[in-house]
Amino acid sequence: MKANRIQNIVIRTIEKQSITLDDVRELQLALEEGGVSQQEAEALIRMERTVADCCDAWGDFFVDTLTAHLVWERRPTGVLRDEDAAWLLTCLQMTRTGPARHVGPLLVNLVREADRVDQALIAMALQENRSFAKEGEPVVTVIRRAA
Image (cartoon, rainbow, N blue to C red; front, side, top):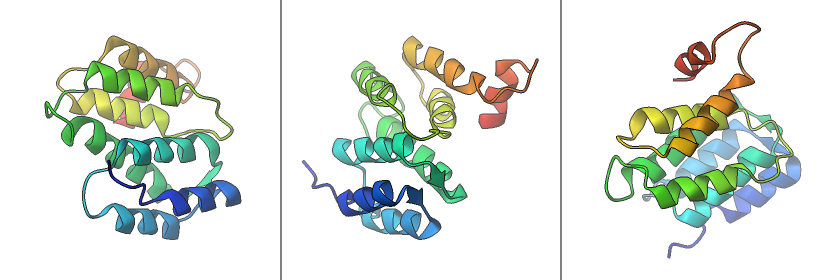
């Protein structure tokens, strides 16, 4: 098992309740050696669930990193395994103290990138993206916009 290379960054951002561009760059540098461990993926999700103030770069980093971890770094490649989907849903359903604005786009990206996705994950993608719909706007439009 890989050591958690980002533990100190995670602790710091949660304590200060802010993720800045410098924090994202530091995360990218720490993770540049290769794939993300399960523990590191959980830490990123914890940051998303608990930190309220996030720079624009955080959303892209969060979505891209977790998509790579769940779809492209795992075997079989291109498939979101049922056990990974169950793990992700469990992590995402934990208590949130921040807005978690990037959960919906993450789920949409996973549905788009993976050849096979659990139905519960698709349902959660729809649910998460409903909150971004303007009055009367179909959720499908919101999902297309997130993609």
